[in-house]
Length: 175
Image (cartoon, rainbow, N blue to C red; front, side, top):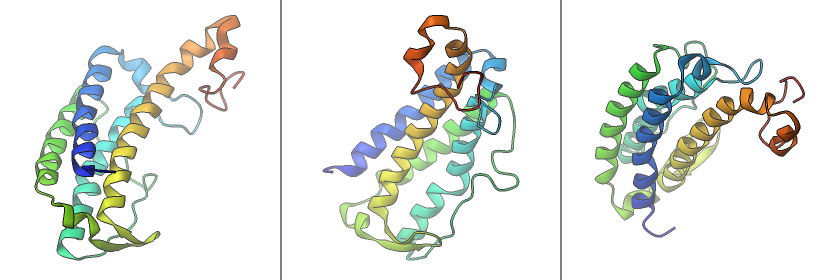
């Protein structure tokens, strides 16, 4: 992809706005509602990017630039996605952390994308691959949050429910 850093920056810069709109508009009980047992609520989906913005992606970019390998990250580990439950507070944390990340990414050069490191589980990876993963990760978790928010509406849609078959969480009534 030409201009990868610009494309990644364009995606990563929109994510705080998307979370701000969701957290500032959707009622808290709906944001906290898990779509099915064992699945993440929208608030969980927001806590995770806060965590990865603090402990994963910027740390990995620095590791690439300094020539270091890095550990895998387990989002289900004890303490992961911990922190405040207030969506507004989570968004504020995310916005602050993301602003720092965006500033760091603007300093990358094309040659940096070829830098390699060893991921503890995946083996050799490049900064280019990790930047693609970061943008995809952002989009995946906002989609996941929106999917969680859809569930009560899907369940209540009566004869239209079948139209949502691809979006219904497994383990919900009828799902």
